[in-house]
Image 1: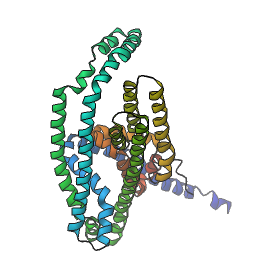
Image 2 (image 1 turned 180 degrees about the vertical axis):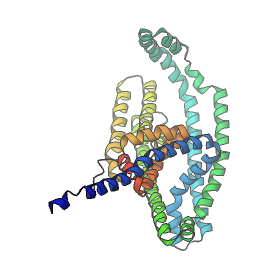
Image 3 (image 1 turned 180 degrees about the horizontal axis):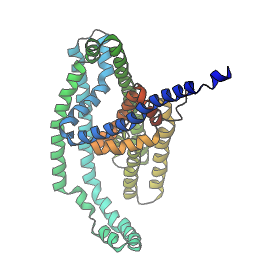
Image 4 (image 1 turned 45 degrees about the vertical axis):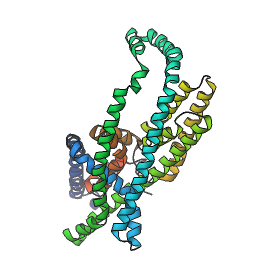
Length: 366
């Protein structure tokens, strides 16, 4: 019995078996990481051609549950698409109204902001920067707040907005085609692959779709709460352009971590420029920071749960990487893209250790 327990041939066999399992994993992980990086670099250089489709896919996933519900209720696809178009038109109309009203308000209040900047903030900033670096002090002195609302820049911004709307029409067209073909991709997988392979592949695709849609819808809910809260708080204190800051908060909150910081800093800066005393701006800063902290640190984790299960460090790295690949849209999509990559790795045996390393926590099984 003892001889059997310490059989050298048996131990060599076990060692060989472990080695054979280790080698594919050892080589697969760096290959997988290199593949993701190379694909990201490739997507960066073809972003102009590919970004329209990605944006359409992102928007389609917002309306996909509605289309699926209407389809389940036996509503013709034509009416479902028309309803989506009506909703998009209402949202666009609301955005245009807010932006046009905000531009008028900015033109009215800007002279007052410029006066306070020149008389109060600029001297304090130049004195502070003068102690650090004469070059920084010179740049602050030469900075002209009026240049921010220069007519030439406003015309350029309007031109860019017009180009954006024309690009949005193409995005909308792609989105409608994606919605119209809802569910066909999984059926094609079933017909294209053997039963065992198609079942496994369908599970991966369905898992990615479910996790992405869950993330997107909960993010929409949380961002709406953050935007409404910001608008209400700023309106209570009488801060200018409260509705605009609320809308920007909703949009910026799609970018994890960085977006919420920018969303808080903008209205706080306006509050300091608007009010003559420091009491109201300080109260605005404390209130907005606290409300966004509660939403981001307490409500968001409660609603999100652990569905994404991504390491915080990985999220930060993915935001930087996909932000470089696709700009602001890449930063918005960084988390769901990384989550999709993790799901794929979970379903490939040699890459499962990498999926565990990418996840939050220790990866222990319950």
